[in-house]
Image 1 (tube, rainbow, N blue to C red):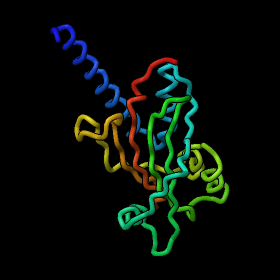
Image 2 (cartoon, helix red, strand yellow):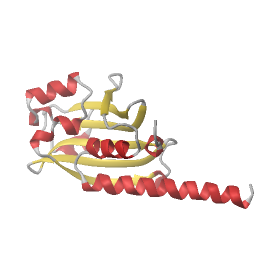
Image 3 (spheres, rainbow, N blue to C red):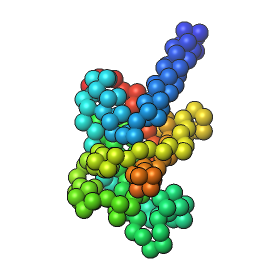
Length: 178
């Protein structure tokens, strides 16, 4: 590869790292991943409706680590929801979400079961905050191909955990325009 080709590849790698750093900074400033992704897509001309496309074929049971993150009491139900956060046909993020349904209203639980509304938008009336405890880029830790950022966080209402999430952001965050 000539020096021009190498410069182009290096410039693209730098652009992608900067985009991921920008996305990571936006996520750090907001409790709502869905709202960040909506703004992200709108700024790139991709629309702004974020849907949580459920994957009903996957059910990861909670384990001691999940229950500890949630401060779930023994015997307390913990539910699981895997979704692909999409903007149009683009899958921007794959998310695993364990949550405490007893901390939500019946209407919120129904919405999570029956709609493609993202979790954060469903529980927004509770005034939650996001406590991120891990964020790593693919360049730092060699995440699986196609993923560019992984975050782990707990969503809190009145300082009590209601949700534990693992989010894997995909290369689709680099897309511009339709």
